[in-house]
Image (cartoon, rainbow, N blue to C red; front, top):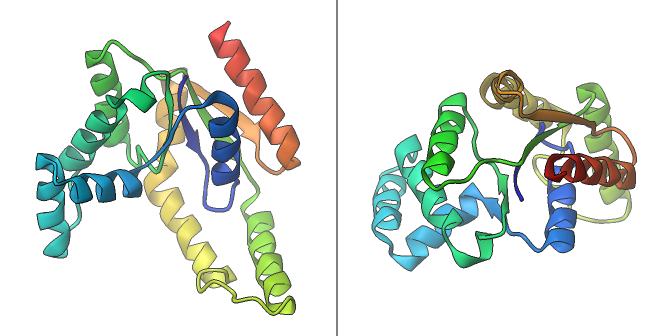
Amino acid sequence: MRLILLGPPGAGKGTQAARLVDKHGIPQLSTGDMLRAAVANGTEIGLKAKAIMDSGGLVSDDVVNQIVSERIDEPDAENGFILDGYPRTVAQAEALSKMLAGKGKALDAVIELKVNEEELVKRIEKRAADTAAAGGQVRADDNADSFRKRLEEYRAKTAPLSAYYAGQGELKTVDGMAAMDDVTAEIERILTDVRA
């Protein structure tokens, strides 16, 4: 099972991905983790990425695409994977489709967690208030202003992926505002349908 989870920050992608990993035994592939692993392993593409990052540059789509390509060829991803943080742009989504086709594979599902952004902001504010009330350390980005900036960036850069995958007939949506277990059940229903 090869899938992508889409949705803005705070939508619950991480929670749902962890549940899918546990249930289906497939890895969650985070772009950041893949980059760090390629650098740590000293692969050719990892060394190229390290040189770019060390100079303060952003790693190009070509480098990211190659790192993803190499990672999904590893044995633990043979039965599938969940992509986390990739693709971020339509250009990366197009590159992913070509890459998978070249390997004789395709995505099984692109699932978007649809959420009410104002409710998400309230969730973040409540989480910060609860953490502070319990005497915990509130994360620097757990405030409404920072969170709204992250939502704006998501809308500008990543949200166009929804339209792209909808146009490809691959997008399935789930109410991300539902109870966590209900979201999990709906994702499993979609996955059962696509495998049928």
